[in-house]
Amino acid sequence: MQKDPLLQGTPQRDLLAERMKLLAGSQTSGMRNRARKLRSEGIHVVNFAAGELDQDTSSSIKDAARQAIDSGRTQYTDTLGINELRERVAHKITEKTGVTYLADEVGFTAGAKQALFNANFVVFQPGDEVIIPAPYWVTLPEQVRLTGATPVILPTVHNEFQIDVGELAQLITPKTRGIILNTPHNPTGVVYSARVLEQIARLVLQHDLICIFDECYDELVYSPAVHHNIVKLVPAMKARTILVGSLSKSYCLAGWRAGFFAAPKPVVKAIANLQSHIASNPCNLVQYAAVAALAPDNDAFVAGNRELLRAQRATALQLIDKIPGLPCVVPEGAFYLFPDVSSLFEKSFKGQRVENVDRLAELLLEHAHIAIVPGSAFGADHHIRISYAIPTEEIIAGLTRLGQFVQLLS
Image 1: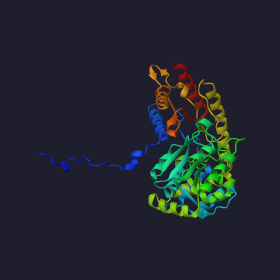
Image 2: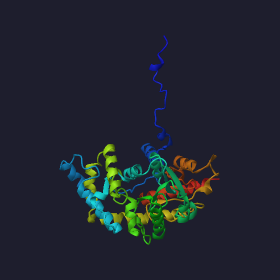
Image 3: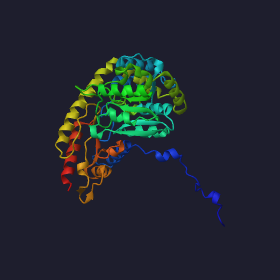
Image 4: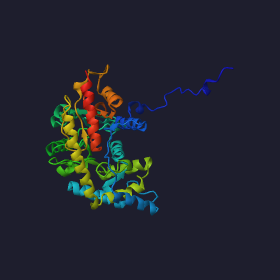
C-alpha cells in the first residue's frame, strides 16, 4: 500500500527563519564546552578560553542572595529591576561619568549580553549600517545582523588595535546609524585614549549617530593606563549613548548573569517594553545580590581581583615573550593576551599542516591540551585569544605546553 506523502513527516520548506542562516554560534562558548568535555574524560586541559575570573563570589554578595531566598523574595519585579538596584546603578554611573543619571535612565538585565542585544534591537533596523572596530567581541556583529542592520567593520590590527579616527570617518555614509565601542577591549586588552574617544564623540554628534559603549571591563585596568568613559569626556554624548556595564568580571558574577545599561529615557522605555516580552524581569535573587555587590564594602574585593590579574598578566607576558614568532601587544585592561600566530601557518605538527588559526586551535586542543579561542571568532585571522584569568600554575603549564608545541613545528 502506497504511503500518503503528507504523513511522511518530511518538511517541504525550511524549518528555520532566514535570519538564522546568518547566525553562527559563539566560538568562545564552543571552546569552553570542548575543554570541559575533555576534562570530564580525565584529561588535564588548560582552559585559556574562559571569559571569567577563576575566583569565588564575595561572601557579602552570596549572603545577600541567601537572605533574599530566606525572605521569600520569589515574586516578579519591575521589568528593569527593583528600584533600590536601579538607584544603585544610577549612582554608580553618575559617579563614573560626572553626569547625573536617575533611576529611570538605567536598567538591569540578565548579563551585559542581554543589555547589548536589547540596545541593538531597539535602535537599529534593516537598512542601517553600524560600525564595529575589529577585532571585536564575537557577539557584537551577530547582534547587529539579528536586527536586520549591516555591521561595517573597521580594521585596527595594522594600528596595534587602536582606532584610527580618520579611517573611521571614511566609513560613515548616509546609512550609518551607529557605532559600537568596547573599552577596555575584548579580545585585545587595549584601552582607548581620551583623545580618540573625544574625536569619535565629535563624529557621533556631527552625524547624529548612536553610540553603544560597552565598558564591561572598566574596573580591570592596570595603571598607568586609565579607562575613559565617553560621556564623561563629552557630556553632550549622554543624549546619543547607551552605556553597557557588567558585574560578571570584576565582581566574579559571570554565571549569575548581572548586567546593566544607561540610556536616554525613550531608549530605556523601549528596552523595558522589549524585555517585558522576552524575559519579564532579570532573576530577582540576582538583583538583591547585585545591590550588595554595588555597596562600598566590595570595593576592596574588586581591587584585590585587579591586583591578582596584574600579577597573572605579568606571568603570562613573561612566558609568551619566550616563545619565538608570537608578537603580542601588551594589554592594558581586561584579562586577555591576543598574540599574532601567523608565523606558525603552513608549518606542520607531526605531519599535520597548520593551514590557519582554526586548525591551530584544533591541534593545540588535541595535542597540547590547551583550549584557546581562534582569532577568526573576533575578525582577526592571524591571532589567538588567551585568557590569563586562571590560576598562575595553569598559566605556566599552558604557556609551557604552547612553547613546546611551537618547538615541534617544522
